[in-house]
Length: 269
Length: 362
Image 1 (tube, one colour):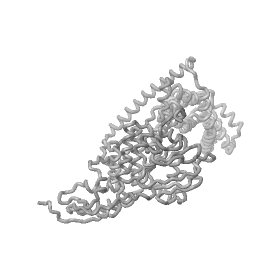
Image 2: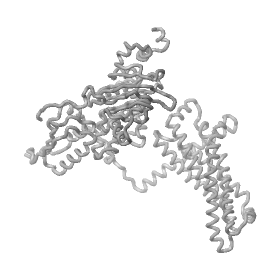
Image 3: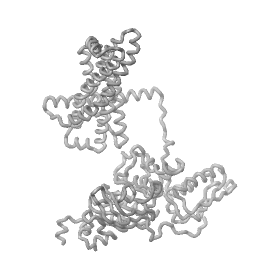
Image 4: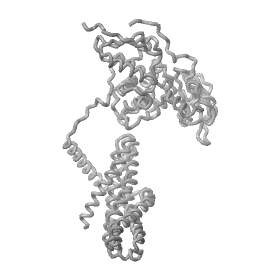
C-alpha cells in the first residue's frame, strides 16, 4: 500500500463554534429559569452544564435541541439559528445533534440493535445488512457488541445509557448532548463511560454538551464547565472545573465543586 | 496459478463519506462486486479526509468482504488517522433474517396453545383463590377495605360510563324492535315484539353488551394502570412494605366492579326497552299496551338472572384486568399487551360464562 500525504481532519479547527447560546431567556409561564445566558461550545470540546437540582440544566439542553422555544435570545448550531429556523430547517439541524436522554429513552418494542439502527432506517437508503453492520460497529464502540439482540427491558442502567449514546451517534452526529450520563451508575461503569466519551471525542472529534452534577465525571472529562444558579437565574461560573474548584471567587461555586455541606462551608469561611 | 487478477477496477473515494452519501457508495460497490466477481477492486482513499460512523462501517465492510484471492478489495492511500477508526475485531452482526425460525406443525401449535391456556387457567385459579381469601378476611373484619378508593374507582368505571351505556342500550332496543317488528308485522304479531325485547334485554343482551363495554373501558384501564405500576416497581414497593397487592389494588377494583356493573346493566335494560317501546309506536303499539305485554312476558327471575350475570361478569372482568396488570413484563410494550390481553380474555370469558348461565337457568 503506497503512503501519501495525510490530510488533517477537517472538524478540528480550534476556533470554530459547534454551538452558541446568545442572551437566552427561558422558563415556563411565569417561572423564569434563566434571564440572560450566553456561552458557546467549540468543535471537539467537552462542555459540562452543571448546577443544583431544579436550576434548569435539562431545560437548557431541551432548548438547545429545539424542543422548547426560548422567551428571548438565540441558539445557533454551527452558526445556524435553531430558534428562528422554519420547521424543515429545524429538523435538519436537529438531525445534526445526537441526544441521549436521562433514561436512555430506547424504544421498548425494538431490540438494542434495532434501536441503534432506527435513525438509519428513517433517514437513509442504506441496505439492511449494511445498517446492521453500522449499528454493530457503534455498539462495539460503546462496548455493547454482545447486547444487540437484547430488549431494553433486559438492560441495566449503564447499558441503557450506552445504547442511547450509540443511537444518538447513528446518523454521524458530531455534536452529542448527554443528559446525566453517569447518574446512577456504579463507579466502574461510570469511569468506563467517561473513557468512552473521551475516546469518541479524540477519535471522531465529537463535540459533547453534558448535563451532570457527578463531580468525578466532571473532573475526568470536562474541558470547560458552566454553572447555572437558580437564585440569580444566570451562569455564575465558567471555566475549567479544576480552576473553578480551587480559585473561584464565588463561595457557592467552591462549595459545589468541593462537595461541602452548608455547615462545612460556613465553618470554612 | 489464479492469483494474478484478470481485471482490476479502480474506484476513488470522495473527500467525505457520511450518512448522507454512504448509501450511494454502498450501492455502487455492491453492484460492482456483483457484476465483477473475478475482478480485483482497488479503492483509492487519497482524497478521503472525513468519515462518520456510517463511513467507518463502510470502510470496515470493504476491508472484510470475503472474495477470492485474485479478486480482493484493496484500499490504498487511507490516512492513518482514518484507518485507526476502523475496528480490527470481527463484528458479530445480528441479522434478523438469519435468526432461526422454528418450524411448527399444526398439532404442535394447537398443543402449545392448549398447554398455555391450561397454565393460564391454573394461574387464574390461584389468583382468584387469593382474591377470595382477601375477600373473606375483609368480610371477617380482619382487613380494612379502602372504601374511598372503591368509590373513586366506582365513579370512574361506573358513573363516567353512563353516557356510553345509555347510547348503546338505547340503540340496541331501537334496532332490535325495528328488525323484529318488520317481520312480526307480516304475521300480525307486533305486540309480541315487546316480549322479545323484554326477555332478551333483561336476560341476555343487557348484561352481555354492558359487560363488553365494561371490559373495553374498565378492564383495559385496570390492566394498564396496574401494569404501569408493575413496570415502575410500585408493586415491589407494596410487597416490601408487607402489603398484599391483592388486598390493596385488586380487591377495591373487584368491589367497585361488583357495585357498578349491575347498576349499569339495569340502566342498559331500561333504556333498551324504552328504545324498543319508542319504535313500536310506529307499529301502533302504545306505551301502556307495551308495558302490559312486558309485565306478562317477563318475571322477576329474568331480572335476577340478568343481575347475577352482571355481578359475575363484573368479578370476571376486574379479576382478569388486575391479573393481566400484575403479570405485566417490563417496558411500555408489555403494558399495551396486558391491556389488549385483558380485553380479549375478558370478552371470551364473558361469552363462555353467559353460555353456562343460559344452559343452567333455562
